[in-house]
Image (tube, rainbow, N blue to C red):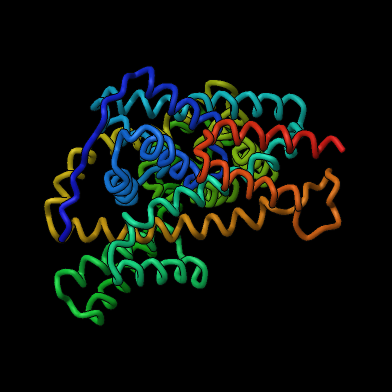
Length: 407
């Protein structure tokens, strides 16, 4: 069993603020994109953490409920500055995104429409995909250290694509298989235990929306601030995986059961959450604003993110100890192989979307956009070969998107 040393460089609060505020403002593309961008900033550029240490933090977030990418940011803050650092980095990552989302929610409610910013996002997407691809490439030596981990990596890709299993479940499954094999259980035994674990976890995950629904008063036509806070606090306490899982819960509870939202309002709230950078879970700010104005947005956001802070602060001291226990160290190694598989699948999925023509642009008849492909290739080469800061590449992509949308 490899003995991974966790080393940490020093950083000031001002440096932490610069990094995590930038990640919040430019963090488009969902949880995996946020983690990939954080890995670039924290590991590659500033070398605050080793790749192995960063991967262990990512793996650990899959063991606790809450939005994964936000928990990674909180974990990094804890490693750098303890509990004050965890709170500081978490707020730096969440607050700017919430403010941007809230501004769009106010505009949406007042005008009944969403602002047209597709051109800007279209230009950002190829650059984001390039950044994620590079981050995944750089993690390969740390995550795929032997043949078995490479096999688990390929199997994890198949599980995500062929069986449409949740990424968090696949990561945990990869960790269980690798840990069981490393303690010399047979593959058949490992497979049967894993199958039982998957079925058990799957049943629990499937029950979570109804369990949460049963604990909230569903009769109120107009929810109070307490109703909103209590609902989203419970969701944040049981939400495994990325913030996208949140959407399924909200559809089941707030639309189908409580009748607090219409389906169209939920779709618009999701769209605003997609338009804006930072955690996908800031969609709760839009929902809270629709239901109860600015106070509703604030209490909903507080409710969904508060458990992440508490759970990370409680679990963070255990991660170094996990590496000293052979079984748990093997589990983390297996989860890391699943994390890399999720990054690859995300790159492919986002590439399908990001390299298509802009509806308002010049290439509406083409299957893919030559401009988007060139922008992706330029970002890939500039970032990987010439070490150009990702922020400048994102700004360039946004400018090109606005120009293409104008014609």
